[in-house]
Length: 255
Image (cartoon, rainbow, N blue to C red; front, side, top):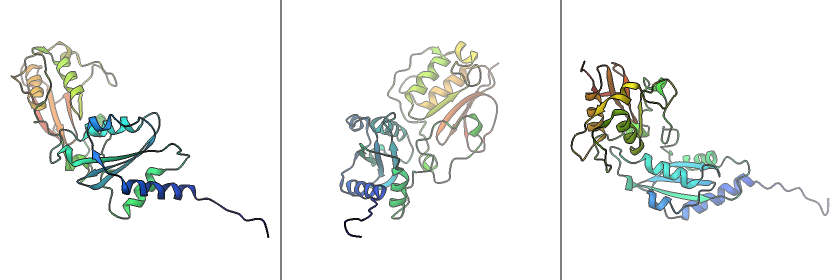
């Protein structure tokens, strides 16, 4: 009829098209703390690139904004074998109106038609999987499999010595850019095991590595302690166990 027409605006497709255009014409910056610190901690979408190749797409909300998420990723890529952190760059776009659109999925689908987005769904940026996952393997060709943690890298941190084992491990955990988990006094608590809290540790002369510190801690503890390295983390427990996908760093044998 005259004077009337029905029009449906495809908002998700329009937003996707605009974002792809913005990303494609943006220059990337090295994923380093000094660059990320200048970004608004707001909702948006971002890309990570390895040697210029897109490897990860993420989305943030206002509570865990772009700056926090990228700071976490900048930390994750540190102390990794086979990976110079300067090879990783980022592009971030603040989006003021999100609606209910799943931009992350749409962007992954769009760019995935061109080439695989390798780090999405690869375990990259995951939280500690917990004790129940220590016997399972990481994803083949996933992030941790390709770039395992480097426990022999020198640390730019001063560690007082002698000190209690719990204090040494807590400081080391806070400094390392990957997961270090050690046995608590009780399950699901942060209070360290009593033997960790009571044992004095003398560290070797600096510079220190994670391996050297952990071996010194294990050597000082009573018999029965073990440190195990996995591709993405280190665990220290009162146990004597061979893990199918972990490598023993040290076992305590003193009485």
